[in-house]
Length: 74
Image (cartoon, rainbow, N blue to C red; front, side):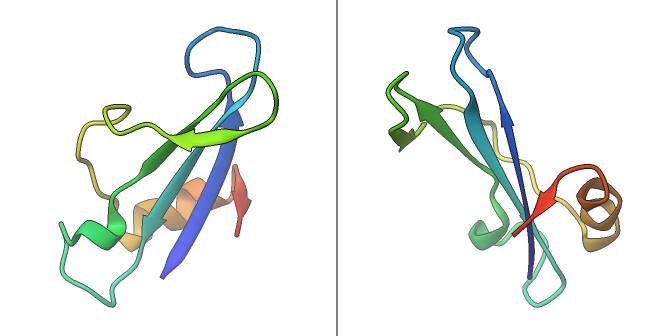
């Protein structure tokens, strides 16, 4: 499984939030393990998972490979 992470200001409050994107071919497309996650920064450097932050979308491995060339891979 591959993962990519990107810091950006999702809610325009001046603090960088974090999105973690997962992909791969170990499990079937649509498996919950590949669900992208959004973590909101409380402006003090503490992050909490945004339960309603993202719609369900999943990436195929080839899409994630292109994306990881632009963001930090973890």
